[in-house]
Length: 366
Image 1 (cartoon, rainbow, N blue to C red):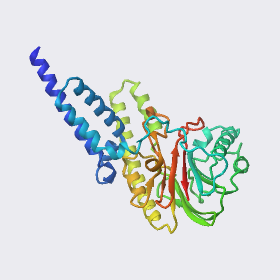
Image 2 (cartoon, one colour):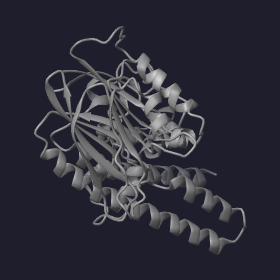
Image 3 (spheres, rainbow, N blue to C red):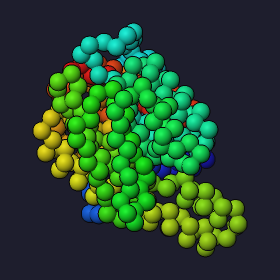
Image 4 (tube, helix red, strand yellow):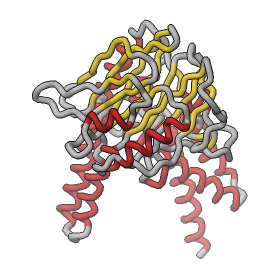
């Protein structure tokens, strides 16, 4: 029994070290291009789970009063950049609620929202769109960025514009001939002076930028929906194969899932590089909104943010931030980034029931 105990003890130390090593590697995932470091994006994707596992191991070694507790603590500390991108003080102030209470429209304050509406929850009556419009109006939103705008024959473009008529200006780019893009849209209380659709190679996802004049001052707004992960669809396929008790088919499905994920990592990296170049060329203060389909640990997040932009959650957020409702609320994949000239004063992600995402709302002082 004593020999078994010592074996378990040494295996525990080994597993603690391996887990910490992989987690520390995750701190560098944002600097690793997916085409050069095939496994780094997967480590970055799994970083929330790895950090929770290290926290559990730290509690275990603390309870046993062993010095090995410092190994998982070092791994957690090395990922402070990621932790601060999902957790901000005050910790117990819900990230779904605004910190700054707004009454009437306040001069000098611009409120921007981004929302992947998932085709308005795939309902065709217009109820979701009208409810979203009512909520955004109650928050005095000035600019709305939508992804997966979901135009359909039952509640078409004219009906959507009527539901969102509080925002007098809009840009809803059409797909070029022969393309079937996932729809983007921008609605604004302020005039849209210039706009441009950004199409990516071998992808239905896209971005846009538009110049908006806010009380005589120009800003450039980017609205993005980067390469879709398709994780949910592939996960369902894998689960179906696992239920068949056919090991070979399950292995093939798992490999297909991994290959699909890596292909999309590479596509998003290309898209992020294109965006980084366009953002660097912006002549105006810049806002970058949208669904990046990537965590703050990713190459995509770090590349799009670059050196020019700040993360609105880091500059004015609070509590624990996630934006995708599934996967145990571990995924923050929707963002608003901003130039330093635009001082962020509030950032929150309300829990609305009209999509598989939550919207993100940010207030900036112009």
